[in-house]
Image (tube, rainbow, N blue to C red; front, side, top):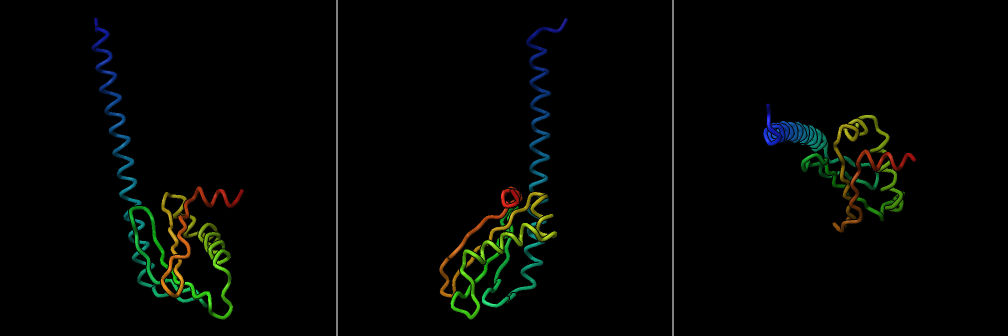
Length: 137
């Protein structure tokens, strides 16, 4: 007959093994996502700089599972929109574009930093699939 303490020990050992397996799988997923973010940021960086009117995309880097995009926005340029409008449009574009939406859906995120022509930070926005879901409500 198996004693109560032996049963408890066996159950505890099984629980520890299951939890270890789950955390290992999560670490592997995060490592994979970090590699995808790094590859995507490297691809984007190879295409830079990109200029679209008063907006210039100057840098793309990866930090863990986040792809960081650094932009410079010249508000004094002809046809420049208010920064709030530019930011709203940028976020909507990241949420609606099939390629970036797919990246967001698998767990990557984007961080948009916009500086003015003097280098002052004007916006620093983190875009996730949850944020995109909130926009669509």
